[in-house]
Image (cartoon, rainbow, N blue to C red; front, side, top):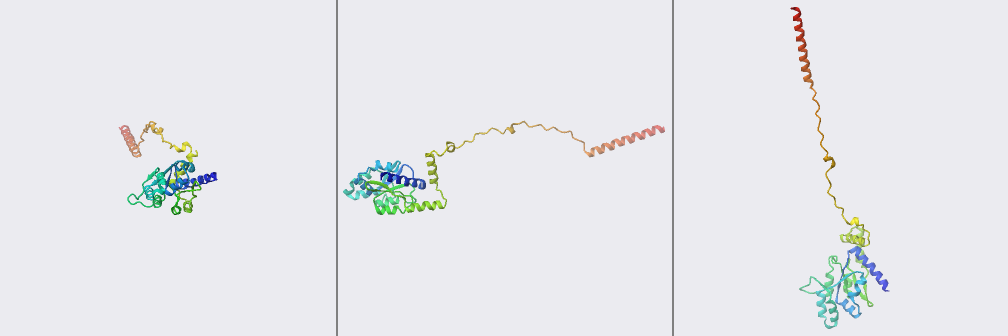
Length: 247
């Protein structure tokens, strides 16, 4: 029976890790009813809960829960002593305390951004917690702490997310984290390749070739004027020869 509970707990924890980004240390908010049940059943919460959730845990409560236990008197004095050992999380009811159940419920508003577990024996509070997506519920039954299966609200949220093919940022991070834990990410992928400073372009280092100036060829107009001068000279020479002959 114990192995079955452990198997179920492992399965449910994987669900919350993959789909809602839960990470160690797991933060568990406890109310007075849970502390009282643990005292009555001789359960060592601090020692047993990390083993059951298979990870480090932070046990915490709120000022409203402590105020409620103080107001209930001697009957819950032992539960108050247990709750006082836990970390106290700040709530929004500093000036006007509310009931422990209302306070814990308010701590999981806006999608439970701090990834709280709720540990309670209050059936009314448990029913309200199940109407929220991504809020794990712990309770005590038959001298044993039990992690409740994911609520229909949580399952519907995950199905809608998969249908819309939306991958929240926290889920991307959780997938990468789990890959690293399982050794599925290569070291070369984790380290970004640094771009080395490249040298100058080898083509730019070549000496520029000197342009060989080609001899300028005389233009057509110059050639024409030269021919005219040569013709005039030859005609003048012919005239002088004739004059010399006549003389």
